[in-house]
Length: 495
Image (cartoon, rainbow, N blue to C red; front, side, top):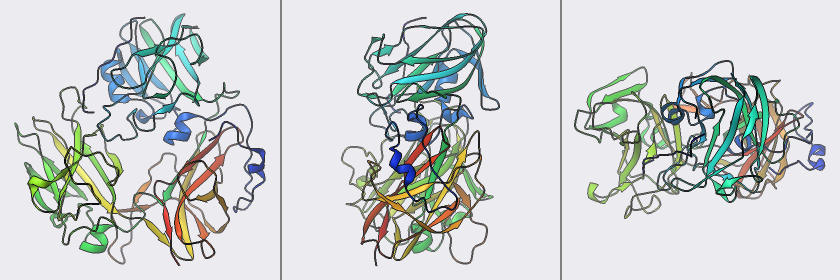
């Protein structure tokens, strides 16, 4: 194989569950969580909420692999990645480093970097046409030296192989924080397939098992009060022109079916959609920014373009706050940020120091014409509770029945060391095959946000919980693998 290659434009829970956890009351009828030893924790499941079971482009750095991985016909069929190597050095990019100044989204390698001291073994099930060799490569960050494993022999047909990333390696050590992860399936041309990839804390005994998934949809970035809905009285759902006040550098702007579409003129790289703001935004209350958008045409950050920004100002445009780049991937993408934590251009006033009278989304920065489509924008605050709170969730398993979760509350979003919750009411919803977290509201009795949390409900009795700010985390197990995840945002309990 050739030496490692890489080019990126500058834009851009514990290993085994303690047995005592299995004895905790789950608060769900008939539920019993067990933890079978041997598979450890899986990085993609635990950190990204999406196991690399090859059920779609979101399991890899799809656009980068398609453009620079020496492959053609890159597709996903029945949870199998299929491609044809066009050279004898094909490469699947699992995590791609992005510039540290960008605001990372889940597809970016800088979003939840890999803890190399925890995740040490990469297991892959790969199908190759001829006998040859496979290897794994990594980078700590964009522009840094590569590390590599030794070669592993693979035979024609299906192979399940495990790489110890800490032993027999060359180049940069597997240590610290890792942003880039790559798999070279063979050193030959021809068609190959990948069934799954696991990056785990131990060598898995049952790697073929698909880990269960749990997504907490409330509390979340979209579960709290929405500014446009509660203050303006008209959600930014792109149902009509009343949702925006100005369309900068945009021609042919139109509203249809709850989607706003616009195109920048040739030579102008800064289209912008200014959302309707009727009173200055209270940044102590509204702080979570979510939008769903699609950008037509092929992904491109080598020459710029596939990046968006959020912009606001309190006084005049010359004193605006401008976010650093947010990479825009292909297809409709839902992106969320805590505006108190978003990275800003130098000199920009912080969100907490602002009282914005203008709030704006810049969809892309291509100088040639590109059409964009905005589905909705939300600006929300924390969820609150007095005597009860409805936790909303989605649980699924790619190779079995959806598991029943156990929930806990914690005063921070780390450690998984909180207090168990006994659900006082369970309202089930059919588990979704894919994680379409946000579903449109069907009936509107009053002004409603563009989307609301989906899934089943666990009612948490908070009447005896002390006033405070709490994160929720959940645990699911299929008997072989266990997944644990914290809520994106907290619940503020106030009696």
